[in-house]
Image 1 (cartoon, rainbow, N blue to C red):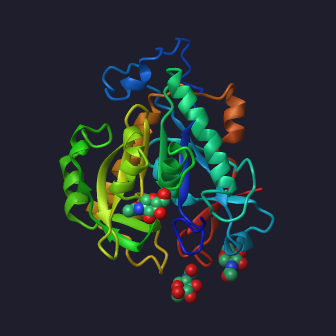
Image 2: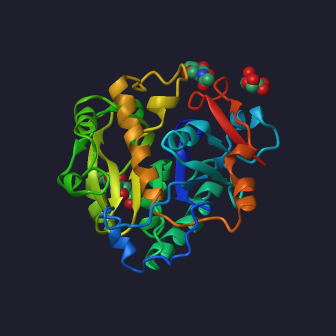
Image 3: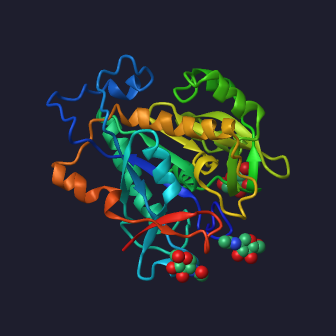
Length: 324
Ligand SMILES: *[C@@H]1O[C@H](CO)[C@@H](O)[C@H](O)[C@H]1NC(C)=O
Ligand SMILES: *[C@@H]1O[C@H](CO)[C@@H](O)[C@H](O)[C@H]1NC(C)=O
Ligand SMILES: *[C@@H]1O[C@H](CO)[C@@H](O)[C@H](O)[C@H]1NC(C)=O
């Protein structure tokens, strides 16, 4: 299945994986197997890494994107990078391990690399090593696919260039993601068309059950597509620090393409989009992952790359980082 989140396959997939921190190294050993549950109570969580680094998985290039940087093999939209940088994190690009064509859940390099990283994250968390993961749009769809043992339960829908509200489900109020969200942010998400949707595939509540994915994830909120189909908009893993959103919280702040006519840029919508970035960076602050040396860290950070203007070839991304 290709073109998961956009007509142009330029999409918007992303999977954030927490890397590290070097400078806050403490020699204390990590607090064992309880950690997986501890993400539910950050007060109990003593580790506070105020120099978090977040890995962002690069994605397969479309032809038009490739034309901006001939010879490159993958890219990351700069809006994803800014979204976490603005909340006090640094970014390391995770270049596709296996090149592939198009953003296909089944065959793309993105999907294969995402699968490997997902398994590593599950294993780390199973070993009590806190390792948060965030998926946006195609990243959200990839998480669902991987957690369903690589079976695809998405259904075709029409939610491209659509701003929506969130309908919160009963699990939202006790979720890690929303239980401490500012009331003003919750009100914005509930009442204003403040989430930015760019996808042609949807997960229904019915298929969350059919697939048994509802045992792995709690659905926290839904939205509706152009034909009033209700789809899952936000998930939180029951026993893992894994979150996914079908919408694009980073676009509210950072994407201004002339064809992106639906993206909400009001002050409240921007704050709501940033809430999710703040939340995830805070989860990253609980992780002790780090590079083995300061030099290794420096050579991996995204500052080794310069973003290019892509607003003329991509309706989705004004600026992008390219990798070879
Ligand atoms: C459920 O998933 C199947 C694929 O496994 C898909 O064909 C079907 O359209 C989905 N149904 C709904 C209601 O989403
Ligand atoms: C788009 O802009 C980039 C950067 O300025 C430039 O290198 C490229 O040639 C442009 N592409 C088109 C199709 O205009
Ligand atoms: C914007 O949409 C128009 C009409 O579909 C299309 O011709 C144009 O290429 C798009 N612009 C970009 C930058 O994708």
